[in-house]
Image (cartoon, rainbow, N blue to C red; front, side, top):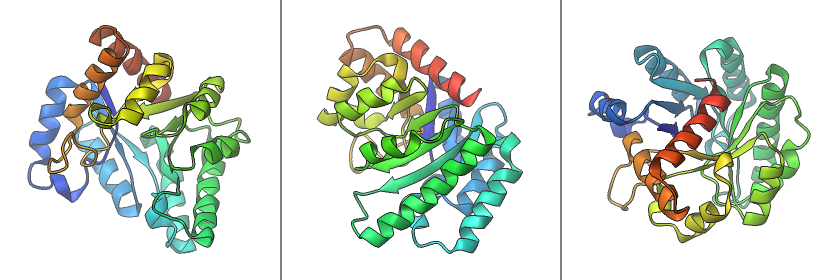
Length: 253
């Protein structure tokens, strides 16, 4: 099994990061540590070097925080990404967030930053991991123009099934589902309908734990895999095999 999206560099893990990673190593093939900001991108790169062959980094610029960034900070992020293309498995997480951001000017700023990373991924033919909360349909419309990006990943997908069908029609786009599956009826209904060939598994840890007072961690992706198997009335091994193959293909790990 693979946790395709987590934030193991966050301070939530400062006191027991090594133990948390060991628990993951005992159960999982590997994890993808998603960069969040300039500092986070550096941190996940260092962790990937320390845990080579188990932690794989992506470099991102989260939409909610990046909307207030300066052009200099954006340029720094993109230059650092270009300098480390051989060390990362994807661009992301980048995108737009219409759940937290309702101001039109800020949404437009998010779109500008998002498309600048799409341009970069398209130029260098790198997969992209997208945070597009409450704007999944808009994101699908946007990414149609980027034909040289090998794979698109809709991180923690929560859009409509109608949009999910459009994503599946693209053939090179995938939807990732997290441990939210354990309690979210919306996500459960989506997984029941979406073809397993277009599904990835993640935790988004330390977020999206099974209970509000709990800290999530990568090893809990096992719970997401088991829930998918339950929802699809199939063996855990089948879900494990297909979702792991999907992740290995996209990220080349």
